[in-house]
Image 1: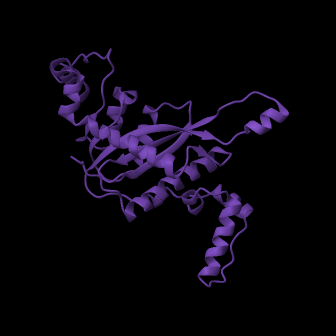
Image 2 (image 1 turned 45 degrees about the vertical axis):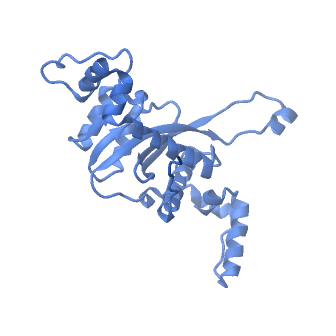
Length: 251
């Protein structure tokens, strides 16, 4: 976590820890950078994410993180074709506090909607509202939320081509009601009515991650990258628990 918080490589983190031990007057040994790298493979930090109390309002979103690869100098000297490789970071965020309640790192082949259930499995508290963007539109997401918290409201904008279900007249689903409201009020009216603007706070959490932790992954293998991303989320939660900025509108 210290390495991610300060954005340093393992070797520099080793030196930083050694300096801290000397300043504190401690004689505890500091593992070398190679040992840190080896141990990071089996690091488990998912339980470090705090669990909020009461029914939750949850925002689910995802973003891409670039994988470590050959630099421009290496390609210029040895040739080859530049390739960009990415992983996808999925987050479930409490918009009222900015706390990351669940996270997962996957390859880009896995769709956003398929990660909703694994994210919800990490949250023990009941859900009050789940918000996500149009990429998550579909009955599988509604079913995943209902399986976790049957009474939870799901606020996801239906696609422009969405049509009501066969039971929309007799037993409309939440998605049917969203489609009907959009027909009556338009998309902007629907957004205001359901409070869809809160979803942008999920994007704020992603921006916070990329600004403080970074836009790329330093680890080379997927298991180690998963541990790195989970540690980054835990670091952000610790920082947020120490204090968050207060914004006020200036006339």
